[in-house]
Image 1 (tube, one colour):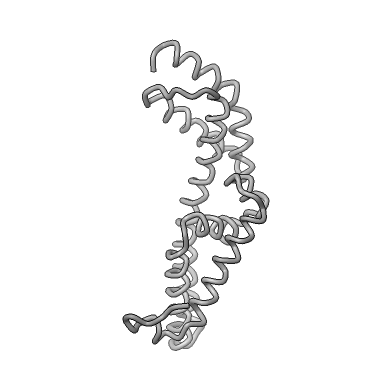
Image 2 (cartoon, rainbow, N blue to C red):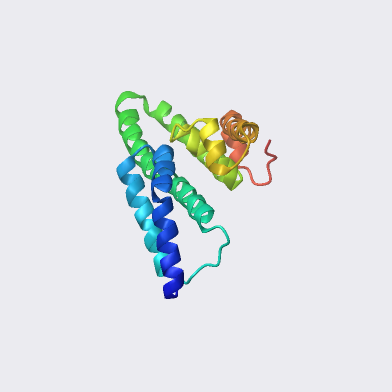
Length: 179
């Protein structure tokens, strides 16, 4: 960035900082983390070449919103891994081996079904089921209607339900028809 561009960026960033932090804080539920993420956003923009944007304030707010979604997505991955390890330990100790094996197969089929979903549908599912975001919150964060979020969730839930309903033999046979 040239000096004039940097000065304008700093001015706009400082003017929007409180709004960005509030936006991120609402989405992730932690003011301290939101402040850290907004600071990271500042550094990202500071280090890269100047971006010509007509409405820099709007661009920064949208970038902060996207950053919150990225943060939730990465936290969901960590949480799922930790929960999976904890659930595996509990399952091994309290269930019969056959039940544990059946549950593991169901989980693998559900994970495969979720991976096969379109990115947006999978993201909406994870924000709702893993992070506890409401449909309204997801709609605002992703700039969708609440009806669209509901339709994505129905698709994701149907895929999960169908994956568990399919006999395991269908999943293993090459060329087998899938619902």
